[in-house]
Image (cartoon, rainbow over all chains, first blue to last red):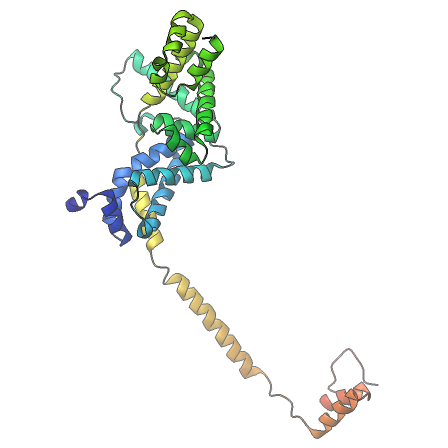
Length: 184
Length: 145
């Protein structure tokens, strides 16, 4: 196992293609937070995000023999997660479920008034995000939360860069309206 | 710069740098408190979004994924194959039993051939029937005259 840890994602996936479960488990360790985090922020629901994460890794396992490392595995997983999220959500009304503290990494705030305010802001922002139309929400998650460029966001959403900018602009306007006084 | 143009530029600012990188906008914001307030709200939103903490996968998810992988990779034998084999065996046995219990075919006699031939040539239908079903063994439903 220690030997496996030193291997690259691509090498681990090649071993997984040959049926090596330990190699695949290491890939899971490396990327499950990333996939789950993206799905959770977009879907707003823990069960749906878990289901999406399972589906993404099952598809990765099945695709392993055909995988060609043309780009980093994380970029491939991001595309896969976005596709599964968008396919799964089409026409479905997602129940809002705020992120509990144990699901987020600590940010270093002490238990002060500022920390409570920060918690309230996060809750409100989570709710406001969940109220956005799916395409706008995914654009915000990819661009603002994942730090992708407009071009990359547009490619993942399969729209033009101009359309992606428009989605982002409309989404930010809605978020500002919904967050109201919290932004003051 | 007019307020409408300034508001549009603020709305379109995707990153914090966009708000301070435009000199003309910066000058307008310095002189226009309402637009400056809007820019402040916009900057706060960008800060909130970028400062959202990373999300961790819940405990046990890794194990659930590996279990699904295990279930998916497990061979379908024996249950599905066994069920399919049993079905085939049952069909074969039923067919063999049916063949064994079926009565032997009636012997073709010259009288039968003649009667059927006559019937085909316009003779009475009961002539052929009495040849096929002798001694009143005609099927129910139509009476022989």
